[in-house]
Image (cartoon, rainbow, N blue to C red; front, side, top):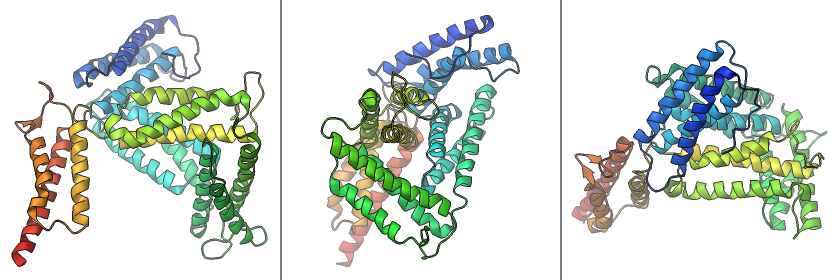
Length: 447
């Protein structure tokens, strides 16, 4: 496995023993990640966590107050903490401090890219703010339970995320509230154009529809200013007008590339390899978002994030350069950046969708989630006319309930994490079935 994409200063003699032990732990974590023959257990992960924390303490003792230096030790340590974080999620301990580390890495990347792109939805910021708030609460609960060295490191990373988030909010502060819908629409259109641009072949009508919306907005301008949703020229013109022009320019670029290069290439040949890698990452993560409840082991995300990190960190001054040292043209740069940002956004989506349930219990949990959705749908559509219609649901609930031993779901002799979540979901399904049955019986009595 290659190291994390960090700049590495020389490793001092006093840090070499720490490096060697961290490499050994990372190798153990990697082997555990690759073993799909059985589910991951707490007893597999916690000893490795203790080994890493021991080396963190040793590193702090060796360096003293000099924490800014970045050597290969730090990059290997980051790998270990990333993997441990994902393993804590895989065993269902999402709401514990060690599980936060991977999310901080992802949010840092997301915020950096939003700041660089200078266009984003306020909904993006609300989601990140809510996630950071939840992480803060989880970190506070970890006081006294987990190593202060780890908690301090995660707290520092959350603070960086919060500062970046505030910068993103400040950037949009000049937007009048009535101008926000116009801004949001332009952001949505630009993302729509970028998504079309990365398809193997898109329908020209889709691009024309997006461009028609832009031209309609352009026609509504007065003295070079866009009206808000009240028809007034509110503050924030320095943001929305350049974004409108950017959307129109990107439409031209995308259409020119499609007409001139289809069906051979959609990008500068010098960057085809990078493009293909990013398309592979995007497609794989996209598939995971559709099947994650049944097929995702959180540790699988480590590889995809690292691939994105390496491509992202290979940029110079924000641009991509080919092997001959030539910078990418505007279309290529925007295409590759969109794919990188899409990749990080999909990983974020998968991380926040992870359930606090061990992968050993996920099959049961997912079955109950499906049952719950079905019962809610039946309730939404007026319930059942006869209690017998609920027999299939009741039989399935009883079969799941009968799997419990002394009120707990066991796998072999193990009692996996997430018992509370699964039992709560089972109880909710029983309550829904009882409500539907009672309503049907009352209706029969009335008849």
